[in-house]
Length: 270
Figure 1 (cartoon, rainbow, N blue to C red):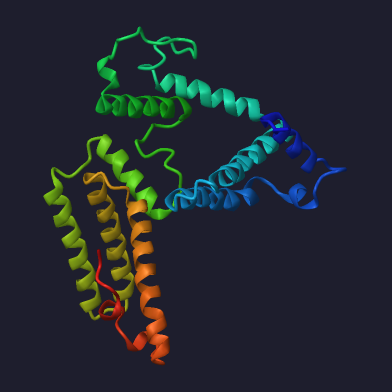
Figure 2 (cartoon, rainbow, N blue to C red):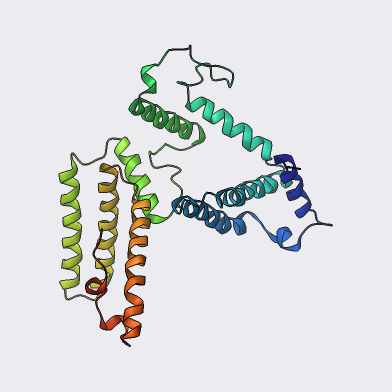
């Protein structure tokens, strides 16, 4: 027997039943589930990065369970249910893919052999961004900004990349990569100047400059079509590998980490 989405929704309804449900699940609310949602999303990403595809169905299931949780909260409060989530998502995707569903219906298709210009990757991307901007305008009651609805809960590096991309799409961008690199160097100079200053606020100013340096780095990553979050995750993995390579040798010598340079002890980068 294989369970279905309907079985999953029934399971959640029972877990949240005031008389027969699980005490832990009954205590949960909108805000308490958010950390679990973020954690599950990262576990999906981790499984993919490790190519642990045998683990992926379970990890994706855990992420789906978060969606079912929110849908249950919405249903209990009379706001929406899981069917509304599915309907809204499908309608939005149909609207965003006119090059695939020309009539805006699931049954519509473009004529066989027709490959419209909109199918070119750049045009599809521009159309996608324009449709999302239009959706933001429909949702907004106040004047619309290109930066509206960039989630504040995103990891800071990912949010910086998204903010920079939105601003660039709106026409606020550096002329070329050399200008981006100049901005990086200027931010690094600001860090050095802040540390050299004889001031009680030297540390605070250095922190601000480091923030500008990191933000500028996301701009360079965008220019080079590199996902900064993924690039940093990969760098973390490489650093962890080098550290783990050095750590046993230092322990064998009775040497503490601060006494040795990981750079000189680590194997060469590849």
